[in-house]
Image (cartoon, rainbow, N blue to C red; front, side, top):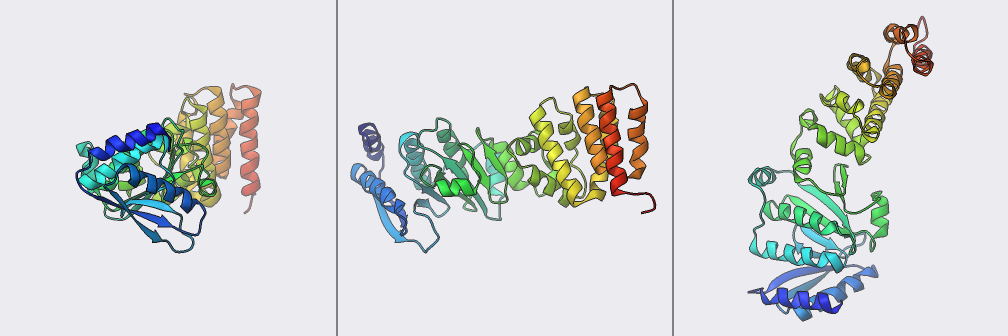
Length: 327
């Protein structure tokens, strides 16, 4: 702990009016000692902070338990020290500010929700993410938050396929990297009906590599989400690519459901630029049946460039292979 951090803790400790009781969860993991050392120094510079050490069962990770539903798996030094101290204050005071509309949504959560937030001590954006999420745990104990140091616990970050920080992972598989939007997070947590998801939420999921999760939602919903076709003709290639990946996943798992996307795609075909037309033709070929062939044939017979016609022809060939005459 450097002198600046020591002074920060000393000044913070002066504002504490009564003892604060935290739990140090330790294991046989050698990283327990590193976290234990931080806790000892914290208590030394802020004497009202008391730690009870508890030995965790095998398979658990060492951590600092701030409350029943909030723990920090790592050493909250560097840029993470400030948000960590603030989290303690929130827990002690049992109050944290949230916009009214967000607070009401959080308070309505009944089923336990587990959030894992990966951070690092040197990340300039991670403190804001911590400050955004910690209030949720204060407002509703059903929201459980683990803040994990991605450098100290590299094996956990690797298992969760963390590519950068901050990264937030919802227990149901949703993932967000970078700036965190509480509106989007609460939309995913509180909406059991994915058809109610906004375009921005679905787009964020696709950009974060959650195309499989989007495909799963579509399959469970029994039809394509109302906003989905818009994403397939979005100006941003990365968004279109994610949406196409989701359609491909649906096609592999439920070809009858995938067939429902063909007419909406064809309705858009004549109003989009050529690269998008190629993408749409590819998807129509992947999801189509023999009844779809006349649509693709109109492209082959129409006034389109050869490479566009080629995709339409490949689509017909793909359909004929899957649906041979007489089958």
